[in-house]
Image 1: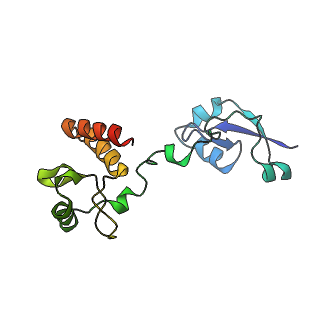
Image 2: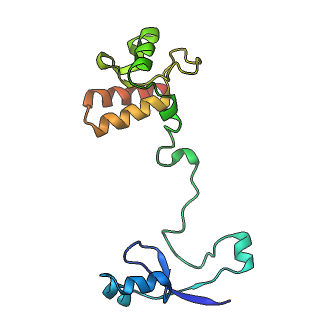
Image 3: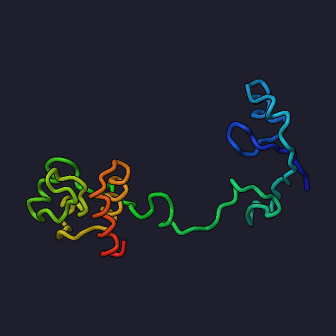
Length: 161
């Protein structure tokens, strides 16, 4: 099996081929001294077997190897689809408040932090949506609305979100 020499790019942290186009570009950049000092690593090239059955296991590259995780546990996984289901500002939120009342908002005086899905699809029967609770909790934490953040945390425990 053929092997090629690589270094970890000081700019991106990814493997780059020594004497490849990216390597040569970095030699002409402010990163030149770091590139010259970088540790060389030999990585086997992919054979037909590796192309068919996956990556090699003898190369320890933390950036390329990721543990298998459910889709729901990734960044934004628990609120996936809330952007489309959330009531938009103005008429949609006003209609939701008229039909369902204050229980669909964590800040009802300004129709802020909605936690029920919009009436757009006609399926909403004023039920609280876990995606809305989690989204409200995250946004309230970012924007420092402590009372809304605490209320969202209590609701997420209550509904098991």
